[in-house]
Length: 252
Ligand SMILES: *Cc1c(COP(=O)(O)O)cnc(C)c1O
Image 1: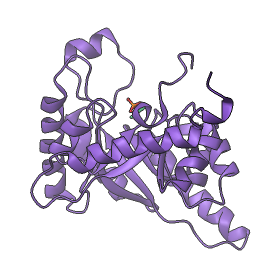
Image 2: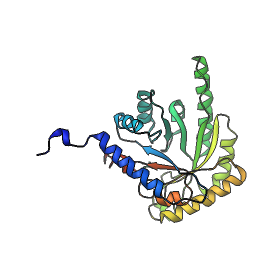
Image 3: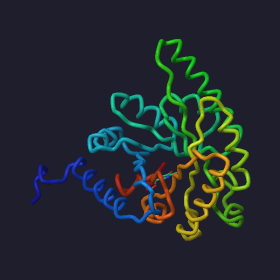
């Protein structure tokens, strides 16, 4: 019989899984001269205690997709040196909350959200000033790009990002808003396509964006199942959840 003390602890499990993902990232091919992509560990649905273990294992960037859950975790873990990335669909009325803890938003997909984030940043700086605290850093913004085919979008019209044709307008809106910094693009590879083709397209769109916004170099792409394809096409930020934390609980 296995005694309780021989069962692997959650810390052991996370250490092993994280190491495997780090090894995959190090081994993944990437464009000549490109730095190793940032690893953002997506901790949605997992408890703050897991985030604490990950921080101890050297993770510095975490991703969350729901404001309520993220705000609670970030507040409880404020003593840790972590950058919080907001990666989920964002309602404009949550902008005020998100800018209290998030270093970046990866899901900027419409002009009304840019306006809301700009206003939220102004209010947040004022709030900090009123409390005698230093201002926060500008909010790093990634434009989320819709890469699904017209047919796939028609079948599931939920928001999947801005259309490529709207990126230039959105980029100008972010760049023209005080408190926001245009970091680059973000996408999720469509289920009905080869991930490599989708990430190649994202890379082209990134090259176009940089013609007008040379500093918007970041590409947030790649999840557990397709991080190698994303890295090969120049992803600078990988968003990895289940391969580090395990399968997410099925009900959300
Ligand atoms: C959940 C999520 C991820 C992580 O996905 P895994 O397949 O668990 O690695 C990445 N990006 C976004 C936008 C997500 O919502």
